View 1 (cartoon, rainbow, N blue to C red):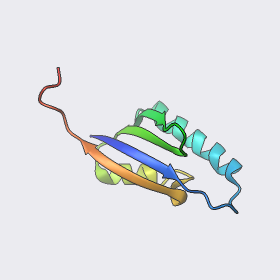
View 2 (spheres, rainbow, N blue to C red):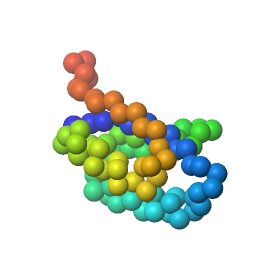
View 3 (tube, rainbow, N blue to C red):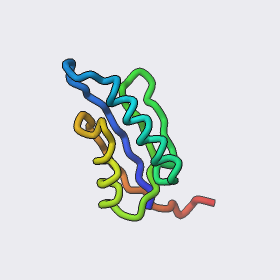
View 4 (spheres, helix red, strand yellow):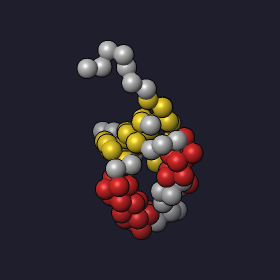
Length: 88
């Protein structure tokens, strides 16, 4: 099942971002290599990204997103995707 996910990061000013960002990058690479995180784009001018995840269920996606080190500081919007009838 494909999901379009927008993640906006809102770090409090008193949080040391460097270790979290390094851990987040390592986890993102791991998920991309596994094929679960199939696309990742940065949103220009924002601390946000658009992503496509390919996982079996809603629960699987939630489990994956909750493993991201920046998860506690994210606003996440998920859109499940379905095949379009005009797609060739």
